[in-house]
Image (tube, rainbow, N blue to C red):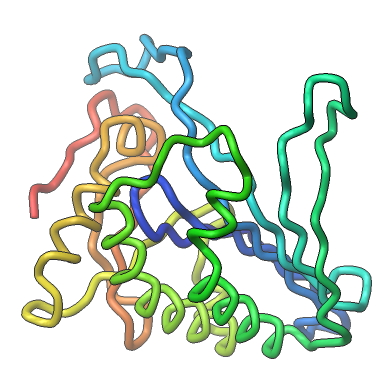
Length: 223
């Protein structure tokens, strides 16, 4: 099954990895990740001026890959400790894929800021990012449940496709603007492809279309 990503803000996303057994969903791994800008510069994508890129770093991992459901909150390693860092784990017992999904979003709703702060060494969350995360999380939750519960929808996703929910016009216009801006950042469009608003079953999403072979400049539709 493909790995796919649902972005919550421009700098927060969830990574979903699913394991099949006898063609049935048997295990789920969800990583809560944040975007860290780096000094690396991309200079060779036609149609784009040089731009900085970053990397997605995992803060918390939720999975039932080995049977029992685990929340694994990562911490950076002290200078004199293991370079692999340390892990703060919670055992949630035996949960199937769907129960783990529900428990994960309950935990995110209650503890997403605390887990960010407890990681340490990260910059303070801006008020706009906090509001964006809190207003988008219910839409992300609904979209994730829809995808995981409907195999035909899950099969529509490309491997490593990044998507974001798009509320209907008038439902939350501020969030529509923020989500569009988040997905329209230069590094995302340059590396992923042109921006597209699509219908995924009963849900509307914003995503990227991969660049066609031989396409020099990626066209960005303005919404």
